[in-house]
Image (tube, rainbow, N blue to C red; front, side, top):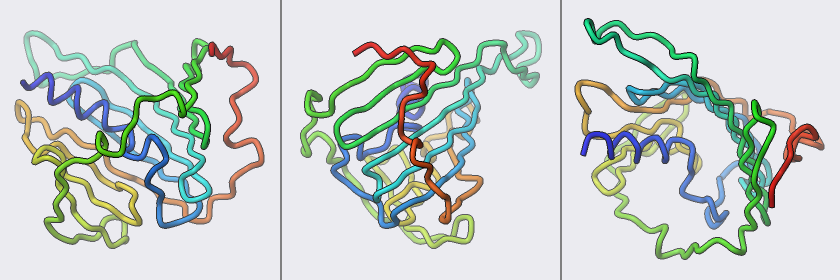
Length: 195
């Protein structure tokens, strides 16, 4: 159960509920940097979007954590690291491994999405301010709590604490005036994409 909670949160840490672009943000362009930790991994995720979320780029840099067998309080960063980029356009999703210089492309029209599959039990449980922005606190299926600002989660937290570890992802910077370059959502030229 505890491992499945970690995996569930890890997969939702970078996957937005609007993967099919069915739900748009309330601001046109933004860059948000997040820090995350789930007890086994820690890292930084950067989200850049334009056209209210029709175009998105997420870059995630992850480090694996290891614990000393004789003293679990001693944590070190393992040599395993990953550097993943996901680019979403209205027609395609690209998942790219920056270090290996490889990637895959998925046509959104071919994905087995349905709006019903994206529905879940969402309740508003309060209001808060996070990074000086007013947020609604939303709880999903009694498992994850989200601090939502303009339909953007600024903080995600797994509700049950697992082995004393708080599993969460939190924005550490927000740039609402980010200038999107003309090639922002292009696949880097040095990446080989398998379609």
